[in-house]
Length: 379
Ligand SMILES: *Cc1c(COP(=O)(O)O)cnc(C)c1O
Image (cartoon, rainbow, N blue to C red; front, side, top):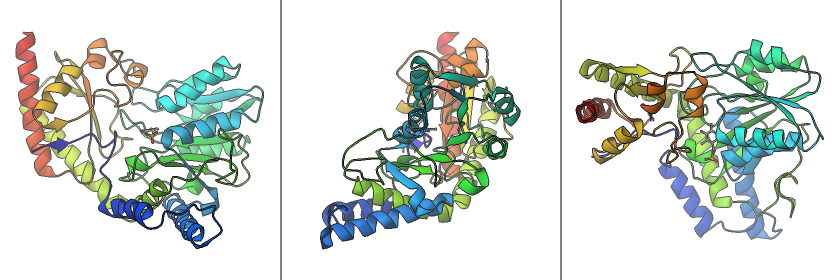
């Protein structure tokens, strides 16, 4: 028996996604730029996927641009805006994904001014903070819809209403929010929005950037002019049709899926508290993704606990999957200004719709056993 509580790192593809990917490789393998029937069939599949992805976020198909994943979509949004200007000011948060932070640090070196807004104790950046940081030369605000480590949900719609009055562009990384929260580009008032295939039971290496009609971005890749000249390169058709199917299924099932993930999380947390003490939750409860739980354990090292849990059959993350393997503590937990022990002893559990209450109870028991083992070792 193995239990997977790491759904924010990646998710298992839907069987329907696997079939669609297979079909794109075995049968509909033409180049969508081709003008013969092979090309037209592939083009039809490309158009269908664009419609499916647009449908998931209430965008027009023509506002969806396929990329190699969430990372590239974040890069395209931020570097694409910056590339249209020589200098200027960008506002973001200090708890963004490395894809956003990396772009912002790069632009800082290139002479742009970047404001990294700190979150409150619950992991949330307010619209008032954004309002205070605005300057006459502000080009862009990039604020994630939900954080990947502590699941904190940011007030993006409120920021959208604020920026509409100022003519400043708004990008949101919605990779963790899609499939767990309502994500509607009109309601959010965003100009750009990032999604990733493998976080919504689609394939890896595929993502999309929503770009509102009329927003002009500088491309990162030059070549054949695919994706309406914004993203050259022959389309990753297996990935694109797989993402399309994942988007269509997610659009239908996400409310039940989010409820299930929350139920499993709440069951796990309830059981764990019956079994052991010295555990605290990082981040707040009120604005939190349904499947996220970030915990710190007194007198335990997070990395050691992760390894012990893995041997016992439970897969979780320490800090974030992208930074594990590195020794320094998570930039997100640091931004919450937590004491040292909580930085070192944290693990992230991310529950998905396939997880069950039985798994929650079994995993709580395994957690309690492994934590006690580590504490005994230390004592
Ligand atoms: C996973 C993730 C990304 C990166 O997406 P990839 O498709 O893996 O490149 C970006 N932002 C957030 C919030 C993520 O969780």
